[in-house]
Length: 469
Image (cartoon, rainbow, N blue to C red):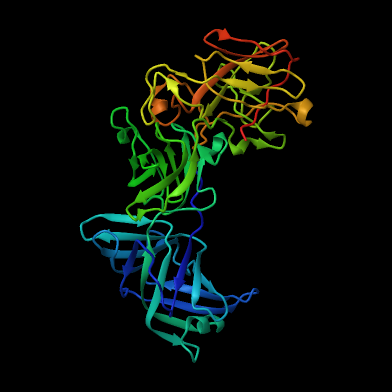
């Protein structure tokens, strides 16, 4: 699932010493000045500031304010531009706050955007949408306070501090420490991965574009891109196949042949390489398609479609064609992380020949006390053990959920025979895989595919519902 870019917060240090971190752009005296205007303390005691940012130009309904300076430390060096843009020509939406007596301020942006561009002397230019900067005033001028300091200006309404600045900008991609890497969130969002499956990476400065999905031009024949918009991801030293990048999120396919155990995930951009994020790799990490948007009051519903690929197995849902499953119906499920296939279909390639999962597929339905074990022959699908709830077990209504495409949550008909859908990241043979056509019989359920099925169900009929979490 793609997530919107988080709100911008800048950290700035003024009139104090700073320590440069690794892989940072250091900029010297800026060509423009910035001004803080004190607003006094808020109810929590923090000093508040209005911020005037560099030289501003109003054109085509947008105000653009720029602070620029020479930089070194990233690439061959060049010119750094810190750009604030917002609609209209009113007051700046950039504000700041600081603890009492502190010159260390936090910036906040209530509207518009703030980006940093690094234009290198060799012609390469990169834009960063989640900047974190440290700055120091150079010989500032203050008004409205006898002591020229950021803290004194903040404590005195309408006092000002103005000057050029120097400082640092950390362009390094950072994977967040909590749930920084998970399996596909619409399929469970687990803390472990399987080879050939999909992962989502969350953090800051993960890309130098607002967002980009892979397109046909990014493929080399049937091979998916291992670099997208300048972002590259490795796990255990092996390249992944990237289908979506943004400053806060990257989606990538885990390579085949990856060894089990703890493996480091590293994101590399024009700003450098992230610290490795360790995640556990297992041979099998099965999960059913069950996006969070379908976590309804009755519980998390799993995706299920009738054979028309339009009607969803679920209670009435606004805007969707739905119906309840009944004896004799056939429904379809989708999932990821079910293990290797034969013949082998390596991750990162469009699947153009039929294959099957190697391990045995198992699924259980219903409630305790009934033998609702369903199993296909080894040649059909793959490993899965799913305990599905129903009204008798949970006191809740049973049903299914609307099937969505991976990440982008667009309504779609999925067809494992469609190579263009495969190229768009819809279905990889070992991962986003047609699980089974499930036939509801008068006295239970069987898994059915290619007219081969084995019935082991001895319970009375139940209305289908499932969960992947």
